[in-house]
Length: 160
Image (cartoon, rainbow, N blue to C red):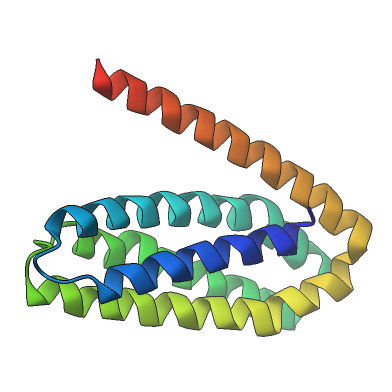
């Protein structure tokens, strides 16, 4: 699978989790907690795939316009990873505050996804070409497999 198709599949999973989380109720504490953990895993891996594999290739092939897109996308990742998600994780899932924070996370991520899919990804397709995107996709699939293996290992250690 090429890199962009793989990332767009990830986007669909994240959007689905965000919708499910935003439609959950304050009474669904367990469900909200589980959905938030899934969302965090998806976003963590997805961010690594983009920042370690696609973004550097995109930046190296582009010019000033691509540099701006690159740094904006990285800043949006930093905002979600360092500020918004940690705040959400430290908010009681049984409160209206949690609902409000989920709405903000959803809006930020949907904006970021839309920019990538409408601006960065089409530009990356032109700059990198099919063969390079296939190569990057293979790297991403390998990274995903390692991440899932490490996560499963971490989960079984917790169970002991």
